[in-house]
Length: 273
Image (cartoon, rainbow, N blue to C red):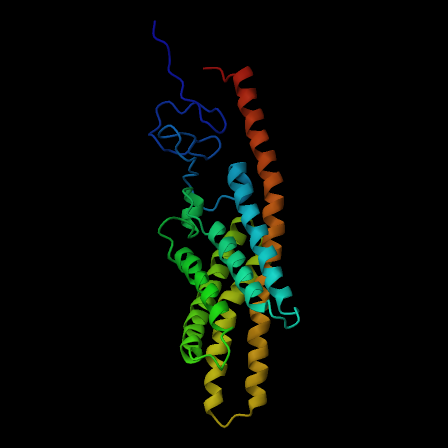
């Protein structure tokens, strides 16, 4: 008398005996198999909502989005600080907080869904966003060098180069957050972040060359205001993303409880064969 071997899906408990390793579960659509001890739970399919991912992953993303938004709010508030002798120190501290918050959210992830959205080890946008943002510390130091300092010209050169790198990193970050918004199923946040990532560079590319033409400076000024308004869509989208990611934590917990209930039901009432 032979006993049948059962290979239950880790998500729903469905018997995966006879299916190739890594195949999707016909019951819940998850891979449902861990290839080795400690391996990440890969979804195996694309475009699964963040709220259906493991709760620890959703918590991590929500924490990073909240830290990033709070840092941006601190940067905006910094522009209203009156001129004082501690301005350089404040700017450096704020830039360090900005780099750390970007560092957290651009830490490589192993899940298939995250890799597909550019958050994997080889994600180019992720790497540009991470290392381009580091230049903001150099920019904060270089811009504070007074004109009477003998290193003023060198400081201005480093300020321009680091400023360009910081802007490139920020725009790539907006593009990366746009992918996270799609993962959270927040179309409003994605539109705002896409506007900041793609709309503002296009505006400045069109407007800035107009300075070399006889066109009125007022036209250039209006174009720059539109470009700045597009950039401000970035923080607005980040606020929406933070709210959506925090809500996804609760939804992920409910989804995991739902899968556990299904597993218990299948254990108590196995399918007749």
